[in-house]
Image 1 (cartoon, rainbow, N blue to C red):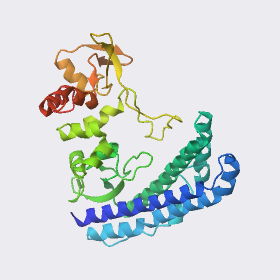
Image 2: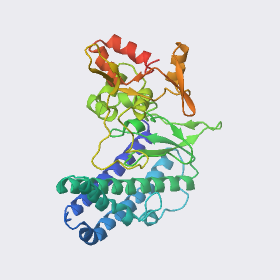
Image 3: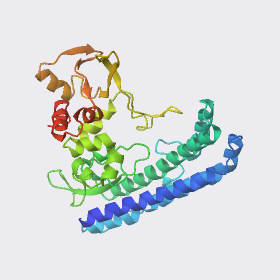
Image 4: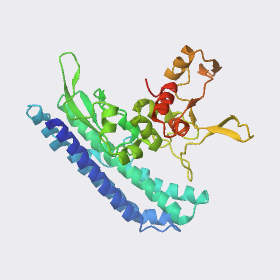
Length: 357
């Protein structure tokens, strides 16, 4: 592991720890609320909750200077580029909203849950979860903004994503990717950080040793339990059998019965979960429905699965602006069921449905 990777992963660990501490604080404060008087409880608790979050943001932003100083020294550069004002990164969300109104989602989520028929104690817990998500995002987002602001002042223009254990699969498949000066887009709750890297004369980023240089490298760095948690049990089993992690993860984006509603700041309907559900594609010989786990990902004219199917002589139909393959693309969950304990058969199926080359 290089000096740069040690610095980057320690910074990620410190930032994650700070976020976890903030979550514990706001959850404890929320526990003093009264579910029968949510608005009154919020009026009483909000000042302390907002103070906890803004203080956490300031602490996160304060981590930027020692981090960037260490980065400079690791590259043989003298730390320079002015000083950072940590307080300037507190009190607001990444989208410009003030922290207080954003945190009020704890109240609205609780009310929506009660309105949806959820028992008040469970609804109150849903509010706590919403509060934790917003608080975590407020801290992580502004901490990263502080890092990038100081990095820009010190003339860094390229970054490598710092992905570690605990990252989701969507972040995992971006391991090793180098970004432009805007660093990386992130989903709510993302714990990835950005490590500045030097650029060669040809404009190619020089990624130091020790960073996960591919999705496969990130996957292999995890324990089996961590792999199953991040990539789902079926997805992880498919990858262990040789499937491309990117193909496996992207397939869930278009899977029937599931949606990445937890990403890109889109709300999840109260009382619902994104669960993979089988679709009926026919009837079995005994008259019972034939259901399979399937995805629409890659089946349009721009998708790799569509192109491979057309090359095999498969048919396509026009749907909206694009043509789509009529072949149903099965999910790894379905392929694993079909293959049973036969690993070779599983690999054949993974290849057939576009998960292996």
